[in-house]
Image (cartoon, rainbow, N blue to C red; front, side):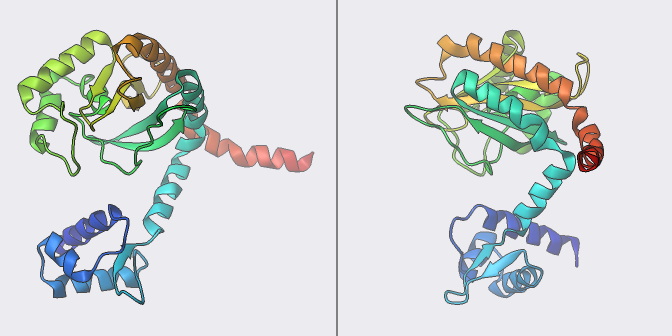
Length: 274
């Protein structure tokens, strides 16, 4: 298999991952701008290996749950959910808003955990599979602001100011605009996004580090989000305090992920002896 074929295969998987319903072969070919025969060979291979399913009646294609299974297996191997969920749950209960955690993967942030704290009124409950657009999200700007300015701007410039989904009306559209927002983030000590990632929603975020040392590498970001009528400037200080407290707690327990996993069999064995 050539590099080009692998690239087309990954693009096809990404396309199917964003679809709620099964997709016809002809539509896949149109959206991928590829001949139907070539797309048919790709999906046939993916069906054979269990990555894609084909509906017997409609002959349409959809992503199988195999990718989700592998994703959860990888998170479990890293012991991420066990470590962070209790922190997120407390933050959600304290703020009574939707809280999420993203981890840093190279030059990308990926959602890995969430907790819903809103019990009344409007509930903000976005798709965890959404791309984290660095220049438009509070999480993205919280991480970018920890980098040297030139590096942060270069990362965004190389990707452009577009996205695979519709952004909010206030998203930055130029390097100069982003530079101002990152400087504001550094001065405040937290990042905000007010109808930047999506219309009607706002968020506030801070980074957390891989250990309590101030110069430790950033491991990820943690955020509080909700409707703009609730996540407003009057609450920023309150939410920032709660976020920084949670981020500090995460930095203390983050190194325990691998240690916790290695100790689990011993705990089970001790219980069996009793």
